[in-house]
Image (tube, rainbow, N blue to C red; front, top):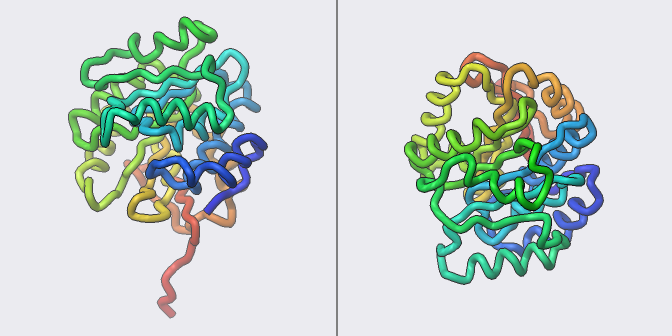
Length: 256
């Protein structure tokens, strides 16, 4: 389900190009994340955009369409699965869908061998070196050590009002992954789960959207208002905090 984002370039990509780029994030999630990035820009929240698990660029291109002046997109992946052509395909896809080569960097390698300085380095050279990261999408290895490491890379780089989005939450193939996130939230109580973006399909899984609690008000009501037709009325409770649930077809079971 594609939703209006308010960003004409992104809306065009979601309508005409998104499905042609191989990948597994839903157009529903891309629409909502694109809206949140546009809202950040309108609020004056400046920063770079990063992704772990970029693959051939489906979601990365959507994120990069939200870049403002002086901002840079950073995509990290081993770029060798399922073949050595993945990086070549990424560059071709990004160019075809309107993102200039100077606006992004692809970092080839495992995050296990990286530190935060490695992640942010391209933006310091190619864009405004003073900016933090305002939006970080994590879709890396789906095991606890890898996710904890990826979160440790993101955390010190984040804008105080930035967002961390985690893919494949509540996926039946990775049932323990969400437990890792809940443990991380308990260890970092200044962060809360702003929203759960429900899955469209088994290969277009749910995402958690994390934000510092002090910045919650910048996003929560906006999501509830903008996507009112997609709000699951019961919502959720993640570690003691109300969490917005957005789903393509919200409904409650008929019990009476």
